[in-house]
Amino acid sequence: AFFFRLDSRMIMHISGSDIDSGKLFESYVAAEMIKFTRTNRLNTDLTFYRTRSGMEIDFVIETCKGIIGMEVKNRDTTSKSDFINLKRMADAAGNECLGGIVLYRGNQIQKYGKGLWAIPYAGFLVPAD
Image (cartoon, rainbow, N blue to C red; front, side, top):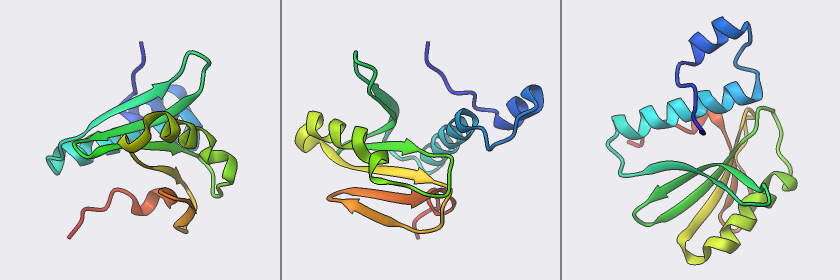
């Protein structure tokens, strides 16, 4: 079964780890995304994408208008290689795919191609005015 540990603080305490652990950071992002979408009553589903060959996308945000793929990187920089699986998912999904995001710990929004963006975590889940 695939699940996220939604109480990151408890996991940090039990494991002796901190949020800098890649999987823990991914779980933290999942918990924050779930809280954000529910609090703001957004009609979305949060899933993941994995092929039989093992290609994986950390999160797929399903909306009434289409899907958005998201990779979570626990580092301060991004590269073109971070977008390979997002591009593959977009090709497979066709017009249903709205784009792809690499969420990372850096501080600059960067465009990597049509509909592909690197976005700092710090500004990602900010409510729209």
